[in-house]
Image (cartoon, rainbow, N blue to C red):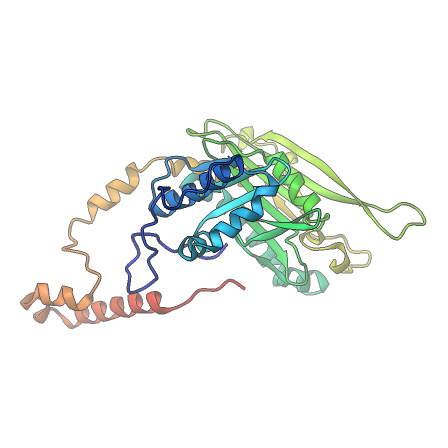
Amino acid sequence: MKAMRACKTTPPDKVRVFPTLPLTNEKNLLPTTPENEAIQAVLDTFKKHCQGTLTQDTISLPLPLSFYDKLWEQLKADESLREYVENNVRFEYDPVLALLTIQMLPSLPHDAATGAVIESVLKQLEKLRRGNGPEATYAREIWYTMQACIWLQFDTRRFQKSPDGQFKHLKARYPGLVFETSYSQQRKDLERLAKNYIKRSNGNIRVVVGIDLDYPAILSASVSLWQARYIQKPGKTTFTVVIETIYKNRVIPELDESMINHDCNLIIPLDKFGHMKIAPDLGDKPMPEIKITMTDLAQAVQIARAGLSTDSLNSDIDALDDIRSVSDSPEEDEDETGSEDETGSEEETATKQAARFIVDSETDSTCSTP
């Protein structure tokens, strides 16, 4: 998805601030019909998202497929709301269940667990990239594309989906490996998500890893893995895709070597990171494998649990009691401090100049993902 832009808290001189969007009133109410009531409920939820007044981290609203196009017609009529939704709201539509699901920003435990597992995959890919041969070339062409939007096919229409993590080969249309993590009041149906990814991408998404964290205390956690298998019948030039469940709700143990079964690692062959037509030709050599070990997963769960508590963060913040003030403008801070700044050492002056350069650089620069 595109970078998030703040609705109310971002300084107006840096990014466009969206206006306060009124909730439903007599002027913008659609005529009362079942179709319009469903659409109005979605529009009001989008506005609450902008205003930061949603009380749930995930909201699913019924929206029949026949209503979907009219929803976008209404959004196009409200330019500010449409632009906000397109750039800031993480949502997905399931045409089979006729549900539109709107998500707030993922929580720290959610992202910490996902990030820890992805870091393990990145380290192994980096090791392969430093080698020689077609497998090294192939590994160098695999990108981690974070939560970029994927367009999944349903009959003749396409609907967007943003996974929690994904790896994509630069020559492939879809990511080969997708990650989904469930940690919220409204638990994700990881199996349904995985099968939709594989089926709606026509088997181009080849592996889906699902991590399920018990909400809210993470007393337990499990991992599942689904993959696409291509079957070609004798005499046929086309393939049939079968969705295989390799692991389902496999319990992730505590981070204790005596409790970890190293035979239960998740093994993903390198060629499954992209379409089979672009797989590296290694001849008689075995295909390298990426392993997500039970130790990796146990560490990810431990990191997620650490994100539940803010005690250590609060103690760190309290320890910074020597900070005088925080200002948006270096010039404003200099005016307030007056003579103290004038008598500061050359080292202090150099530090302030460096800090000011960093702030200005980070504010003005743009960040892109390859």
